[in-house]
Image (cartoon, rainbow, N blue to C red):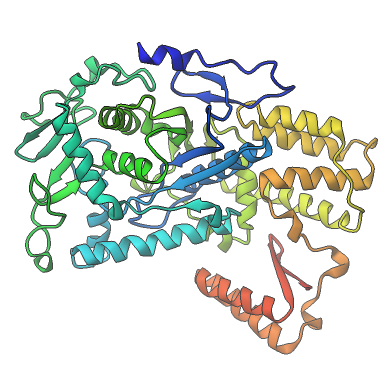
Amino acid sequence: MWLSGLFKQKSASAKSAHPLSLFNTLGKEKQLFELAPNTSQVRMYNCGPTVYGQQHIGNLSMFVFTDILRRVLERNGMSVKQVINFTDFGHLISDGDEGEDKMTKGMKAEHIPLTMENMKAYGERYAQAFLEDIRTLGIDTDKITFPRASDFVPTMIAMIKTLEEKGYAYVIKDGVYFDVARFPGYGALGVVDTSKLREGVRVAANPDKRSAADFALWKKSAKGGPASGGKLGWDSPWGKGFPGWHLECSAMINSVLGKQIDIHTGGIEHIAVHHNNEIAQSEASTGKKPLSRFWLHREHILMGTEKIAKSKGNAVYLSEVIERGIPALALRYWFLTSHYRTPSSFSWSALEGAAKAYERLLERYAALSSEPEVAPPPAFEEAFTARLNDDIDTPSALALVWESLKDETYSLAEQKAILDSANAVFGLGLEFAVPAAQQVGRADLPEAVLALLEEREAARATKDFAKADELRDKISQAGYSIEDSVEGAKLRKN
């Protein structure tokens, strides 16, 4: 069977002192990660957001994880081509093929007329909001490609035609479906038992489907708003409609990264349905196996015993974190305190505790800022690498940093080098820490700068973070840098 060779990848062993190993959901074990033969970079696809609203911190935690993953790959000497997609149409409420579309539901809630032009603009508005959030969390978006699903519909239609020609697709009255029985490896990711899938449990009942597990490649449109001419969607050989949600990722991967990639990430909720569907349609279409060598899945952020989700009414947003005076990078710090494969239990007290620890780290770095540049101690570097390369063990690596800062055998210059090395992976913005001696009090600020600062604080109080960022830029142009902290904004002269 084709999967057997993949499951027998080398275990992490003797090639280097601490080779990089990642837990591969396809095989359910840690496996040695190296560049694929005859390649020069890692091709990584991260399932991105459906842009029908602001993303909550549970969603954002995924992209802090993939940012850390990219940094660890780079630390191991690998170049990375990273892609995060935007689903800007056609994502149904569930992973099945029925229910209300999230984009149209969001537009209705905001009283936006249902037209394709409005949907595109609506999606782009929330795509930009997502980009602003992840930049605020220390993610360099210039290193990432962000394809929009709506730009790849012709590719999706071509893939469906190929699947039809190969006998994997069939047409029924509401659209085109993938025949799972034609793909023998279906369900290998996460070891899904398709015989136990029942309509009405994972998917809605559809008497025309050959199997409960069959999934939509194309869904014919229902009636749209008056301004849409009666129906939303794109023209296709199967009628006006939308590509299936699962097909979007396959088309974008194929177009932007190629027929086969190295790493595919997503939330654990994507394993059973979305990612198995991606594998089936991609490999059936291209004839290439595997679609991805590694599959990494992040656990949920919990509120009590339930995951944070808009549908559960317990969502927390980055804007709320900032409104409480907690720096965005303190939230990033909190994400690092749990392993990506372990559920994290969110509470405001836990985040405030992380913010205090983060402030201490900033203060320590600021106090060391005048120390000369030296190499990190070899013992630290070896231990730090070992922990990071053991399936991105950020809590253990973070603990090592704190332990090392208490080690009196390290000089002050070496402590600064330790923090620099850690900051390159953790992305905590320590380089912006303001030494107390360089801080400028309000009484010493020029009147024009003080006015900008007060205007910025007012904008933050009303959650107008776009305005606040604009004012930060103006303050920077006036010659001052801002570091937001639990105690409030700290300024220094550039």
